[in-house]
Image 1 (cartoon, rainbow, N blue to C red):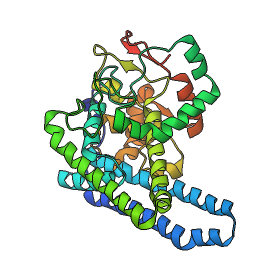
Image 2 (cartoon, rainbow, N blue to C red; image 1 turned 180 degrees about the horizontal axis):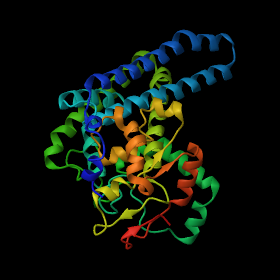
Image 3 (tube, rainbow, N blue to C red; image 1 turned 45 degrees about the horizontal axis):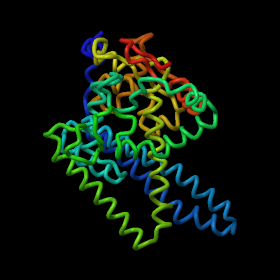
Image 4 (cartoon, rainbow, N blue to C red; image 1 turned 90 degrees about the horizontal axis):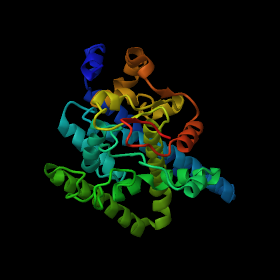
Length: 352
């Protein structure tokens, strides 16, 4: 089975990219983000404060952070599509929209685009994949015993969701080892090819501009306002991002390949579609439950991915299609408890 043979069974119309349709979804997400902020500022927060209850105010903020985190994640998904050239057939549109959205979310657009492209070309290659690279061996028996405890599992999940994304950008956490310290902001990092360096600098400038705007906002409006209106939703965005990508690539059913066994299609099929329910699936542009087809055809428009998944990919792949319809918390707990390490000497390695 090859990518070409799979593509031949899918109608050509699904591979067409539509800028107008993508812009519709971008407008939808921006309107939702503005509406949530306006509702919080003009209605919800004043009503909560009028109750005189700090618990009610805290609850209002908590709901706002969760909702705005989902809106930010939806915008993140669209920027991700820009990086794959799936948002528009015009790269100038892709890079303009992607740069603006990702910079606003403190993501170095081009830098991550390059490393993410490498991930797609080498998905689940033991020595060349770039993210959620499995550990190559187990720890000592004592360390494993501690790691197996429910408390340790909960703490590690919390750390991953809270810090996993910035640690990956800053220190290449969960990435391949390069024999030196690497990050997504250094143009000379081995993550990038020499021709990528000018674009990494552009990404750093975009990132720096947003950090500067945040610093100005702290000076103008106070740190508490910046934390409540930006930082807390931003942390939710990071948590959703790590959760989605972790579950897509971490499962005891998913194989990892050495150089002799790896092929592009094998890697692409070593991903899992996770159903988060109709509301979250819609809100997140089906990034979570149409990921297999995305790995097969990464520049296919996100607008078409879920329909292709349901009507074509599932019947074409049959038993090779991996999915999970369990609740998010159950899937996360199961993967975190059962996927610890692999034995790299095996040509096709599974989590032990």
